[in-house]
Length: 461
Image 1 (cartoon, rainbow, N blue to C red):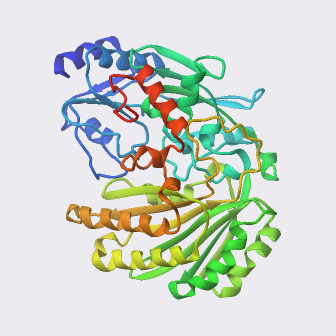
Image 2 (image 1 turned 135 degrees about the vertical axis):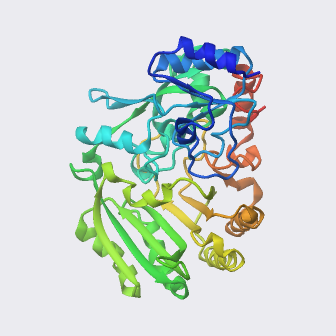
């Protein structure tokens, strides 16, 4: 059981740069507890902030030895990054770093490094990697949970790009894993690592900007805003872009309330394409021909990949983000999604900042081994249900609309093909998150071998 004396003794063994926080009224404790969302937020007995690998490993070992529950926190986006008074949070904000090996085109990410920090470290070397849409998302949990990316058509999902890792097991051992070291655990880590151990370091593949078609890391980003009644024309214009075999693209087709007053529903198409400005203009011309309310087409570079989404990374309030894989595009289902978004705002004006969207990327053109536990590498469409509101009294209503949205986009799909993204949901059956009886059995066997006492959640047991 966690106690003041345990944390005091642990603090004495850590380096001077590390911190152990127990005063819940202190500014440091409050700052560490800030989260992307207050939904389900719990307050721990204490917080450990290791400043290096040695302190991180020693902290985990001490917690395991004393049977004290704990959860890691990197960027604070995870709904599972807080715990109640029976446990502690391992806050990795003091332990960060990126080491770049240009000779091998690899980058090693440490502890709580965030996505923006990763991008900034790679940019001077004219290198890119699979990254997510959010500057304050933790890199390691993003990769080990799958890693959906704008760059997936070029390099695959994040989990495919992991080449090695250091992981603390349920026995407290620091283990290095790769294709040659503990290959079974390495397979499991690439898609389900959060359930098998505590990953302190990750090495991933990086790629030269030249793979993007230029030496500056540039892609072309469009924004086209339409009225809801234009949906048929927009879908007809967008589908050939999403399915293009000539151009590599990714993006979002969103249903939102238009700022600044969030009173008017709008359709926002945000395509990104890896080609010249002239080619992008021609590719997106069918969207322009419809007559958008507003339109923009600008270049953007890898180092500022998600800067335009910083407002979505705001801390506080109640937010939920659920992702569900789709086998193909359906205009009919999307039109139902528009109706559900309308219903959400009518019943809950507090949720006006919420948006429902379909994220796509054209099929991956990279050579792929696909030998990971993630197993969802061939999904090219994802439903993103983003809920944002302030009043806790609206939890049940917003959650019910989330489920309705998922149901609507699964119309025409048999349950055997339902797909949920494990980085954003643990409520759905494991068969939705990991596909195939053999894959699930292999993961369950790994869990029994490496974490039979559920140190790292009860998932897969």
